[in-house]
Image 1: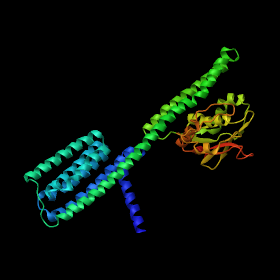
Image 2: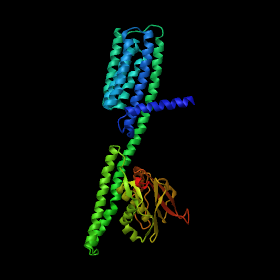
Image 3: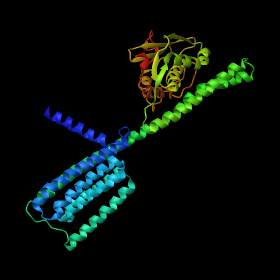
Image 4: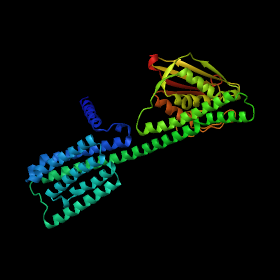
Length: 441
């Protein structure tokens, strides 16, 4: 119990210090967060090594270099952290920290004749740390620096400038330093593997994010574009007699396309600046009615009736364009696609509590097989299927829907059975749980 409590205390202290040093939003960026953890780890390990020599060194080695050298390196290392705290400059902070570590390693090798031992292997870690914290250029620069210092140390040893520690007890310093080197090398290896995982995950997230923006553009403008095209054809062929109504329909759908394009721009900006999607109180019933109107032509084509089970003025926190197109539009579109001609779709709003409300879109169509349900929200999986009237889909809709629901603080659930799995309850129910607006609390 004591060990667990101590570990918890140290962890809280570390993250308190980490948050104090971190730049705003750094915890939301995995690679920047990783670099600060590595900077901290390098700092703490170097402090342990330097403090060890500061305490033990003067017992076996005389001279001002041993007395003051490690202390100056410790001060410079602390300055490197403070520079990061107040300047947010990882390059400058890394340079100062590695300068302190390089000076310490050189001093240690100098006073114990270390250039003829394995002690100068510490130099090999410095370019690796420089590369992980900054870039390949600085890794190359530090590689040249440590090679030059090692060659100079070898030359100085050859001509007798380097001090040869002969006092009893010096072996303790060497063994202890080499043990700490192995510990440091092990921790650095851990960070290298961690960096590989983080970089792979970050690349995947960025790829999925860009794919989502493209998929939203491709997927969600297709419906209003189709409506505009059909309305235009009816006008040119004389099938649409009310020109004003047709013009209004075209204008309304052009505005929807414009809103979707603006949303894509906003999403990219919010992601780049690590800003949460802004939400406002929105009339859920009005949104659902707009969605039904948007898909009225498709509903009429398949003679599908929509049964509405909701009252008026249910307000939720959300983003209007997301709710209409990426969330409920996608769900209703799928329900139509997989419903049989002459079928029915239930659209229900169920208050769950003072803080949340559930929207259910239930169809009585072909349902989803298990393999499709398992990969339903995976943006990299292929889940597209042909509809009951031969409609061809992209498979983009539901991953986009899930992502957008989570962006506005909700979550989505699915229940689906095929006719082979259940003769009575086949079909699909998509359930979206949203936060109720403050006005409704």
